Image 1 (cartoon, rainbow, N blue to C red):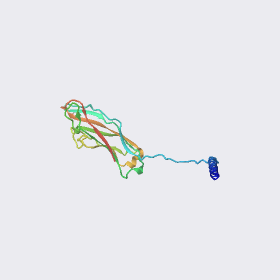
Image 2 (tube, one colour; image 1 turned 90 degrees about the vertical axis):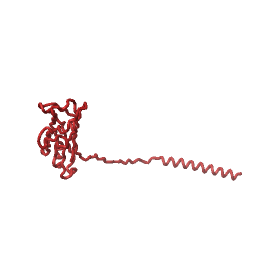
Image 3 (cartoon, rainbow, N blue to C red; image 1 turned 90 degrees about the horizontal axis):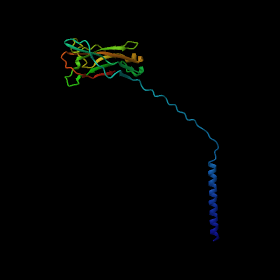
Image 4 (cartoon, rainbow, N blue to C red; image 1 turned 30 degrees about the vertical axis):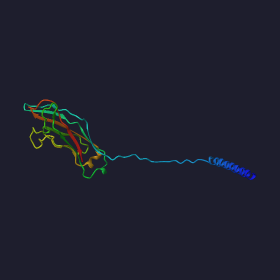
Length: 207
């Protein structure tokens, strides 16, 4: 009996001692002996996008109005919205020998009330460079006459026709921007059906 009591007393003492040591250990772990900060630095550079060759047009529509008609030919005139080509590329981003050019082509004129369409061959233009840059190396395309005219260029805007071009992109890239437009004209027989007509003139930039 005494032996059991002694064992129980010894276990209690051991447990109490373990608890005291645990508390002392916690106290020692929580004691702060000083702090040291570490600055963390990172340099994030600006993202530099590559330059681009791009085209913008100052408007999405234009209207032809009658001007210069005769007893046999109806003539309508207008102006193409300004077309601006921008090049933000560095010289080393431009392929050697590359040149850019803008082409235009038109659909037929569709009658709004079901009247017969007017072929795009009746629609022509006279390109004009407005701002060709300081070097003057941007050239305008030739005038394209209508099928009602005569001559080698009397074909209308049926196929892709040249508005403006630069033969050496790299040589003029530093100028950055150039602008062109065109005088537009349509000629039809005097017997053309009256009414509203619409066509789509598509401009495309290539290099």
